[in-house]
Image (tube, rainbow, N blue to C red; front, side):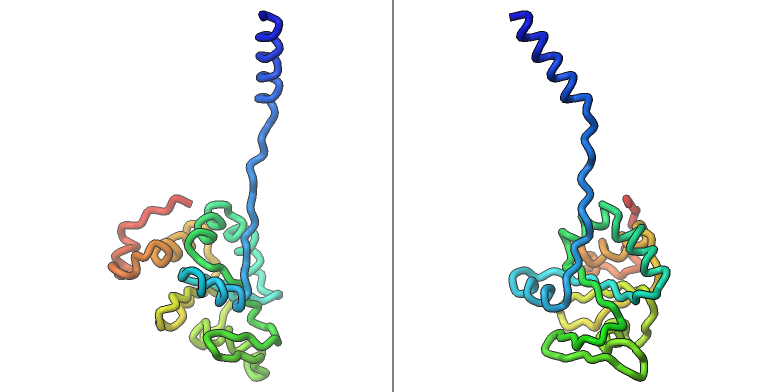
Length: 174
């Protein structure tokens, strides 16, 4: 019996000394069509990352902000996250409207729609799906800066507080 206990203790020490690697999920990006389909099943706000391939700060935001596990977890729970390359030549469909590539601006008309005509990259856009126009937030954001925006909309605070009221009481945890 003592040998069995000794073997079990040895096994416990051996197996518990191994390092367990934390799981790192990647951001799951949807396209507009997928987000539209998901909205039919469950209503959530949509976060759209409007970027271009040449944009340095878009890449930095992807590497630092959208790879942060707290950002990934929160957005996965509270939003449908969509990525749109502003320069796509594909025709994009949203809410029974077609958005084509605009040769004059050299970006897709959806990028103009989502940024309220003020295209800059990166721009984070919130769509509430309640008839409210898109809410664009231009520029690079660290996780803590993005947290302020997404918690305001993701937690439904926008329904009862102004952004300024929410901002005064908000404490970042990312």
